[in-house]
Length: 297
Image 1 (cartoon, rainbow, N blue to C red):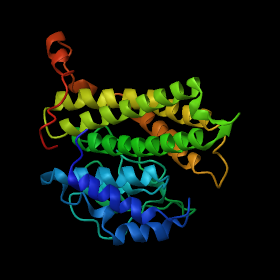
Image 2 (cartoon, helix red, strand yellow):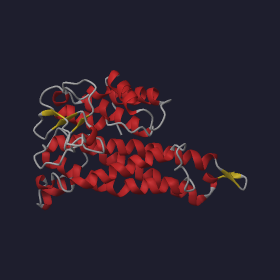
Image 3 (cartoon, one colour):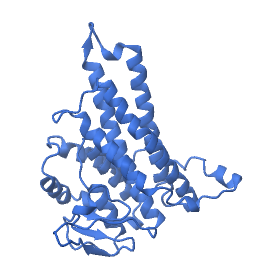
Image 4 (cartoon, rainbow, N blue to C red):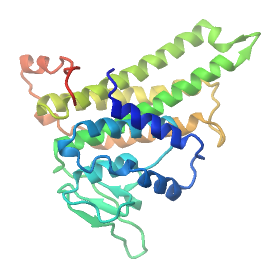
């Protein structure tokens, strides 16, 4: 995959910052750092700045690879979709296309129409949740899906790294587990699943600013592949880890929890954008051609 400089820069920068963070840690303190470093404002000028998508993907992927759960992708989508800048610089923002578990505690809610509002509270002081809306523009939904897939990809990469480390370091009968053919085969299958997730995510990114039918096709494909491989990645990583890695101190489960949560969130969106996909065989076949790797998405 072609990795652009802004994506690499943000990936490296975020990875360095979170290296010594506790998990789950102090949400507000981590959020203060994230906003102070400008991570939440990456997509504020998104419509005319394609390269900003690279930076956002780098930041979201790095956080998830490190097993850090922050509402960054949800806030990025809300800020990108907002018609006017959010009034609060450090607000946790929610949008109907990117809810996760963060919408109920959001400081600011941005509707499908792009209009921001303060998060409402009911009589008991509980925040309202954001409901899904059929009026969400396809490209906003696609942006949300790209960042969700990037978060899953980061978590998958982190889970793969933890599983590979374990089977390489764990010695039984005088040799590492990785020396056992069955273990090597399973690790290889895990790597293929991670690569599949990376490929479909990259295809949606390539098509985000192009033809809507091609975008919808890539979006539907990404959802289908992610729904299949994400749970399998989590299960396989724990299998290789000897069914361990689920204690508070372990590193693996912080990644697999993100995978399962993001996969569950994706189930909410069903067939959004499917209507834009042509049913004519010739036209449908043309949509299976890979995106132009030379273009800037």
